[in-house]
Image (cartoon, rainbow, N blue to C red):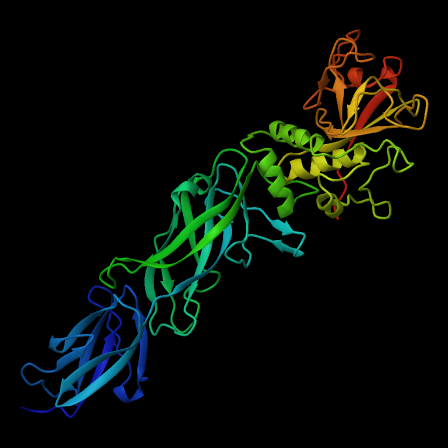
Length: 472
């Protein structure tokens, strides 16, 4: 038997049909560990004679370890992962290479807009960060998308200790738990990506963009428990066509809203979205969403400032007199357990929560040419029916009043909807999308102004729109 004094084991980069073969440098220059054992990959290997023009004896070289049999070329299929696997070529002498076979791990994702879709900025007041698509994100960061749009995420994979020797084309997909597909539309997938060589992170940049071909639900909604299992596939002839599990992102939070959020919530606070999407769940219009927010504020347990506790009846609780801002942080911290709010507080809450969902509520400032106006019977939040909500004595008027607009949304009080709101009995209605002035002279109590304002003062009362205050 003729011995070939030297042999090398060379992986071939370009398999048949994949381009020109590229060989590694001579055996003496090759590292002892070949970290190209990507789970799901196939790799052609060649035994190289030394000198190269030496012929192989019959039935040589022989292979051992990851390949068996004889012949100059073999294909290694990586249907395993781990360290220290050996591939040996034998022909008089022996050449062995150690292969570390890796399975990458899912490590992170961030949300981006899908085709024709919109993803929105989110702000978390507690951590003082603003999340923007695209933004570096942890696996459980929340997403905010427009209703009825296609969603997308960028996903990243890595291996904590290994890097690939050769780049490998792959397909990536995310399998959404079937109970959660309603919120994303369907699973996430894309045609191709590439696991790069020489880096712990398998995909350059933020990761592979994967898309849902279906759209989100066509209404306001939220989900706290979306689970997505991430897999990749190396297609034949380079790979086995088997999908390889890499881990999952669990308890993802999705918020689905009407459209682009508006001031003062152009970057909605997560806590605001959490509350507003629950209140307005399954609403499809700005008016419907604002109505549900109106109801939620009025029924929240807040109480109108009558002056009994503060000595300052009608004074706002959350207006910052030094900055002119709405103290949203304080409002959220005290939610459901605060008294002594006024109409400005309630109108500002309306714009914050409604506009976070994509509505466009302004503030409506109601005044009288006389400087004040007396009331019909109203029911301020947390209080009983009265035509004088203050405790100063006598019958006190309003100097002004604030609501949401366009059309009247009033989370501060119910008006009396019966035939005569100037006296008992009372039939309460919470103003939602109610006309301020119905434009029907002589028709008493047929609009918001007629129900709110004493008939003697009604004609002197009008309103103007103002933008919501900034928040802090």
